[in-house]
Length: 431
Image (tube, rainbow, N blue to C red; front, side, top):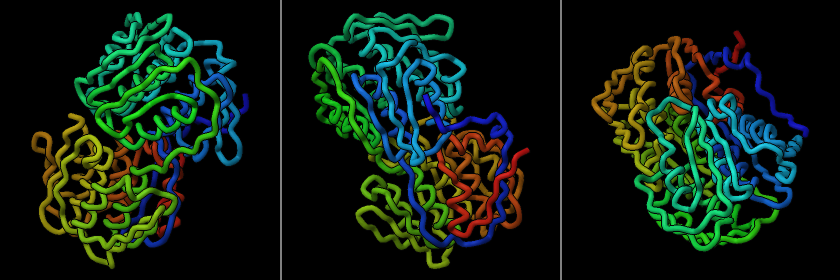
């Protein structure tokens, strides 16, 4: 096994230093989607031959997933372009241990593939960002409806099944990882599985496209009802991951908040309709191409917007914190309502330290825009909160220090390098 990713515990102590007040200007390339590559890597466990995944972003969550597969005995090769070749035929263990799962909730995604392909799985209850309750009971109930025997003991999900059976699964709430786990499990189940109230996110569609290329029979991905006709086996393939819509949106907001201009390349504008609408509401001039987006604020201060998060195709919860940052420096009053997670405004108190006039009432962050923020020492509490604080730092007077940036490394590839390409003054320091 040859792996060129690395996890260094010293990264936990790194900080980002940002000197704000400069409009961003330039062009960057968007990386592959974190939220697509993680389930796809889990889905490689279903194959009976080697799978090569390309357009893989260099992220800590990818490192964790690669380490998890390697811990199971799966053979992996990562080349200099970050293409990952996975050969699941060498698998020896069927356990996802706590020490790996605790840092990343997406580790739960190996449960469905292991159970469907090998008939057994032992997966630790997951960890990840502290942004509210994201129970795994929908995963468990769905697999039980497909014939799995499941116990939860000592913090582990213990599952076994001779062969899963197709079933009609009605999701109580829309869940992306739940949809993905059950979708993967259903590919090798006997008979037909129908998943109702399924998540419609582009990353779910990308996973379905990947599985279909392997020989699965999936229809309806991207709609509330997904139908899967089980097959006996899936083959190895080469697959390119779709671009990251959240990274795309984050850099667009970063340019907008600084009154700057940006061209993001190697992206897919069709995945960002709701975000683009709000950026235009904020006063941005936006031009779209087949695989690029150009935003120009023409030096103007953004206008405050009203945002309400909801499952795709509505406004994404993963862009909520970034638009909160935009609103705190925009002209006028704005509101951001979080309808997906109940504990996702921890960045607000950090923005208040920078002089933002923002308060939380229930599920809504209410803002009265100030012309200038002031640099301060702030602490990242989750992945997207990290991005919002960096964005706020870009427009603040003086120096902003962002602590606990290991969160940002879970979901943004080389963020300080990309922002530097755009003229931002940002550097990483190790403590």
